[in-house]
Length: 411
Image (cartoon, rainbow, N blue to C red; front, top):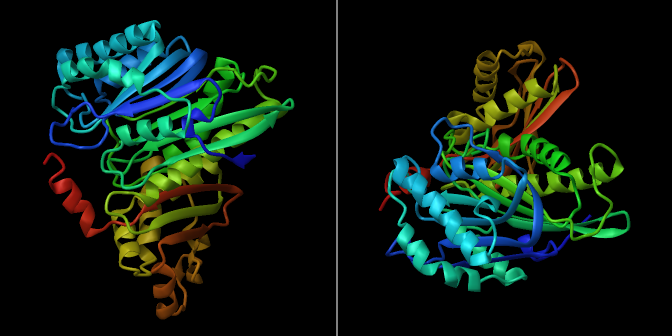
């Protein structure tokens, strides 16, 4: 596997583009994106678990039920969530406008929105600009970059990746983009992820691969503990690579899955690192748990803890907060671990310092710990003696700027 350029346009047969249409009148950035496959695609998706779902989520769930898509239209600046039947009509109109422009079935269009909740989407503005959006489509990195800019909200960095693998002697490509900086928590976080591939793969295998990859990546990501109303991760596969069809478990499936998981984890880390106001990427690694599910519960609980995140911001080796988060996380999930077996270390490029042994205090250098925790990438390493379960979760520190950003988000 090798990393390549092109983003979602790295996969053969895909085009993308983006424009500024003025969804937020005073904004200057692009705010409307389109990803399009020139041929029919197998498709799979994972959506937010929030009971309050945006109109775009409801519609996209309907449209992907047959495991087929041709296009994704996405806007930033307005979430079209909690907007009632008017919002639902606007989402359907977005799909219809896209379909009419591309001469495809509206049921082959997924719709995504991100931005302020509770404000009606200015669908007339989108309608006036749909032809310009179609004209922006390109099959290169410029098209990819335009679409990526159009889905960003409080993001400060691009989050994208493309890779090439070989299956049956054929070059197969996976390209992806995501947006996500705040309102992010495990079980789909506000994140949007759009993935394209020219792999020839059955819808059932594609669905399995996406769900497995999301479990190992996006669902182990947290910034602030808030699960959005609009989250979705969508993958489209058009088969243009010409490989023998991937039907399920086997060597070809493993090659494809490993690449997809790599892509999703890369995007996950980029979102964590660009958390609203964040200065540090925090990676929590748990080994020696009873099973993987328990390890995941513990890792996510520590990564989600506001007190742990604040300690990371202040470079304070307050390991008691780590055990505290493990304890309530295990209780809430009905999981188990033996406190007397817990070892905790902090690590970064400045070194490693063990701070807890056997569930109790361990003599360590506060000065060294301060140096380790002052780096912009920190690992919290938790070792248990209960089994062979292991998992990783990703988060960030909690800073003053997070409050500043979200205190005037609607302004």
